[in-house]
Image (cartoon, rainbow, N blue to C red):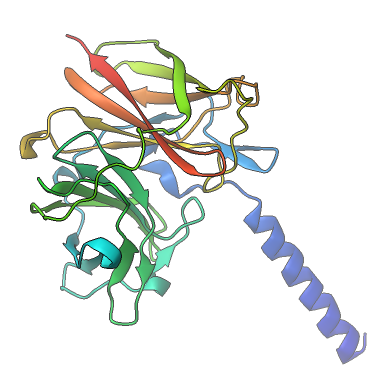
Length: 290
């Protein structure tokens, strides 16, 4: 084989391998989801039939990473900056993080002033910081809880970190009701007691009756986060959920299903993040009883 043909053959083989690996399920989320065996259907990723999300307090897991989040301004300059540092105080850089659900860093903000949640993806900077645009209408007046999940390249497994943002003035009013034209037409919870495995199903529709078509969002049809309805520091923690393929996902009123190992007794908020052409957030109460 001539050197030219050998080069072409090796290049083609490398390209095929790269494309094949890109089609494999994201298997970094074994911590977030017990029995993590994702499946791919129609180019989108869904959780496996035995997979369930877990509720964690990141601090209790004692990962060797520290999170610091600062808000840099209000009005037209509403920006935030975070730093992830290892146990030696060195910031984690872009090349040190692997992709999980199409992003390197997932930031979850929970408002402490009123019900509010945002799922953001900070952008790496050369100085070791990560910046993000503050969501319009998010109320920081009483502060916020911040959580991040990410996968360091060196071990390829998701780890978690948390921080508390102090009160910050200048929050803007919500431009429209949470969820916009989308509503949760029906919600079912198959179990109610701590440590039980619950299937949460949400049927969505547009308030104007127009058929709803969900667009891919970070490689799947939606994401959800469960947080305590209690805003006290002692109640911090979250579960990051992704849909299971249970049927109804492509109906005119699509149904998304999530499997969750229920946390301790209490009242919780499930925040669903979907895309119908615009990012939407919908809140559903989840109650765990004795």
